[in-house]
Image (cartoon, rainbow, N blue to C red; front, side, top):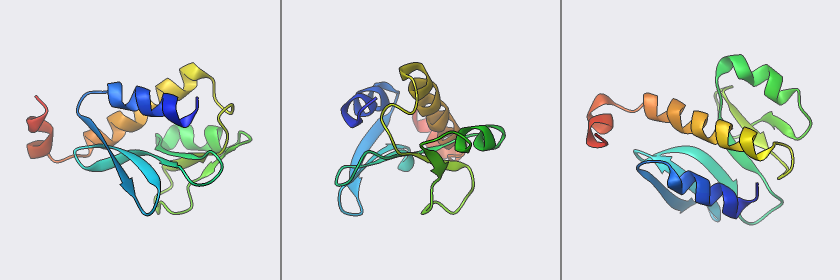
Length: 113
C-alpha cells in the first residue's frame, strides 16, 4: 500500500482523525492517540503499534524494524510499500487501531459509543 491507500483505509475506521505533526508526518489518531504515522517528506515509512507476540516475527522480515522514536518495543516501522501484502497492511493497521483504542481511558472510549 502507498500513503494514499493507507490514508483511505485508516480514515474508513470509526472515529479516526488525521493530523500533521513534527513537520510533515501524517498521523492517524483514535481519541487523540496515534495508531499510524507516515512520513510525507522522505522515502516511504509507516509506523504501527503491534502485539508483543508479533513483534519478533515482524521485525525479522526485511523492510520492518523497531521504530526508533517510539520508546516501547511494540512499535514497528515498515520501510517499503511492497513489504506487506494489502491484506497484511489492513490487518496490521486494524490491529494497531484496536491496540491504541483499547488503551484509551473509559471516558474517552464511552464517547465513541
